[in-house]
Image (cartoon, rainbow, N blue to C red; front, top):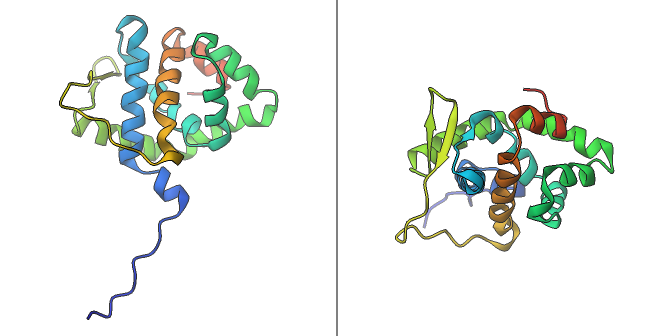
Amino acid sequence: MTDRAPAPRLSEAALVQNEALAAYAIWRFGLGFQERDGQAAPLPLAFLLLPLVLHAPTLATVLSTQKASGLYLFAGKLGEHREDLLAVHGRALALRQLTLESLIVAEQSRLVRIEPSTATIRAFSPHNELVAPTLPERIRRISPASEKIGYWFSGLSDQQVAHTLKIGF
C-alpha cells in the first residue's frame, strides 16, 4: 500500500485544450483545406482553427452552418452578437502557444508536413492502416468542424479570412 495522493482530476479545459487533440484538429483542418483544390493551407490560418473549435458556442455555430454556406454566412451568424465575433481575435492570441505546440505534435506524428519555405502545412491523407481514434462525445464534433473550417478557408485569401473574422495577423 502506498501513501501517494490520488492524481488530480483534469479540468474540462485541460481535457479539451491539449496538444494531441489540437494536432488531430489541425490535421482534419488541413484535409478540409486540401479538399477543394489540393493546395496546402497557409500556416497563419492554422492559428485561427483552435479559437473556433475549442469554444463551445462557436463550435456549435460552425456545426449549425452548412458546408456549402461558407465562411461569410458563419461569420454573419457569429456576428449577430458582435462581441462573439470580436472575441475570436482574443482567443487566437490566447491559444497561440497551444497552436504552435500542436503543429509540432502534428508534424512529429506525421499527420502534417510544415513547409518552411512556403509557410504552408500539408495534411497527409489517411491510410487504411491509420484508424481515427474514438473520441468522447463531448469532443467528437471537433473533427467535422475542423474539416469544414478548412474547406471554408480554402476558398478565400488569407486577407479575406482575416477581414471576415475581424482578425489581425
